[in-house]
Length: 269
Image (cartoon, rainbow, N blue to C red):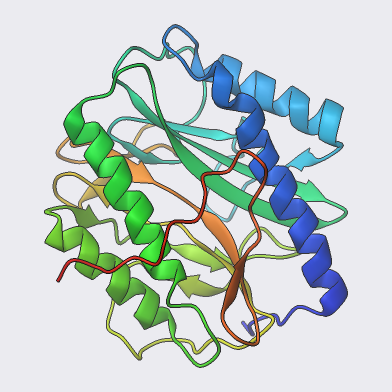
């Protein structure tokens, strides 16, 4: 499948969708605290997307080949859940960490982003994993420019994660995005520099590393969606949608409450 190069009008539409997705996470932030259920977080996000933003929650009833329709409007992945956690009756408790993954559709275009949340007082180990994963995402994003490759992103992420004693999930990756939820290219979060698809201005894709505190192996739960670490170690993920510009990159999933871009990072060798 060919990589879709966005036009100026499509890029502007993606900026709007990206900002709106990030604003859902801004909205839900004060509700992420001990005692709330993941189902309540989903309900709040859904009502905000549909009732306030006029957006469509892309995950709701999303059913790629081989999957049953996803039953909720966001993904909530808690502690050792790696991704695609289905919101429900689970009550968040003090010390949990949770990833909330939001994808909205606005005027036919998708905005996709996720953040880690610390519930109450998280452990030093949990906070460290979330920080390492945040750094990995930005180290990957900072590789983006015309002429760079998918492998450049993957190498930067893998090198930093493994230097910190963590591991990179291999089974899931970033992806092109636009009018479709998932497009080419696939953005692997591990690899060798100079390999894979080469970037050019107008490409839009997600960078969304999933980093485990323990081993990288994962398994799928009986619900057909939720992915967990095999060794029950903690897992974290951050995600931004990124545009390749003429000179570098632009992060599209930004809003007033989004964590600020850090100063350029240097990976630990």
